[in-house]
Image 1 (cartoon, helix red, strand yellow):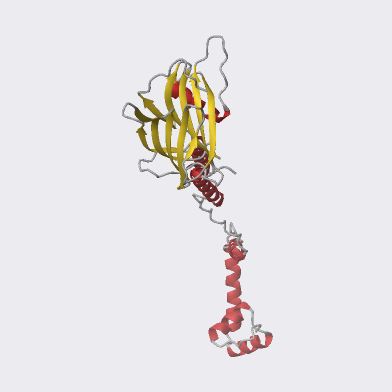
Image 2 (tube, one colour; image 1 turned 180 degrees about the horizontal axis):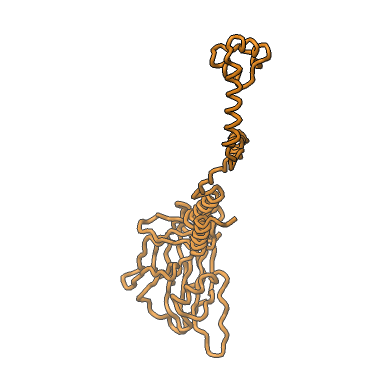
Length: 171
Length: 166
């Protein structure tokens, strides 16, 4: 049956091409123009914003590393590469329902909180957020976020480790 | 004469007479009209006898040549061998395979580049539009940590050791 070499060659090449395409994860291109946004998941009416304060620290000799919280588990490689700590622990977290008009305050801990306003745009959320440490504004940012795509903020350093604030639109 | 058609010319009558092809009545009538016919006939018979005796007919090496030729001509000819079909460069199944491969490629490209924007909760998609540090003593930049966005704030003082985090 398989005596036609060009057809077999075409089949093999096509299969190889498809395999390469499928093996390679979709290329994420950071667009230069703002709001050229292609979210991974479409927003839903019951989406929420979630914020957490995370402490990154190194394991003492003889101790066992604390497993990464489930909320951050899939970002373990990025956290390790970016911050360089052995373990990450959530000190506190807060969740609020999405509201495009009213500014929401999320208070994960008594010292760190986030002010956020989120509106749906182009299948994602345009979020205006401002991170506070006590009464001091650390940074304000405007971002387009897709559900399940958190933003990390490198906060101050403590003797116990590095303070990291996380903001995410959750489903 | 045996033939139904009457002999018209004298030459034909003479030939038929000498060959013995005339009937008895015709022979008698012919001899009556030509008194020298009998003598001529005897002479002709003697000559033919002499000819047959001295120069017999040569034996043909292929006596049935004409018959064989005729039989060969009229015999039913075997069907001519069908001309060898020219082999197609792309036979039908090859074209079908090529089409299937093309469809497979298109589906793969579509799945890899187009459909990738569907519901994929595990896919990280975030775009920082603008970042502003809280005050002049701070500096905020966006760091891409393997695709994950990190707002990196420089200029923060270390927290006191007795600072309560929780």
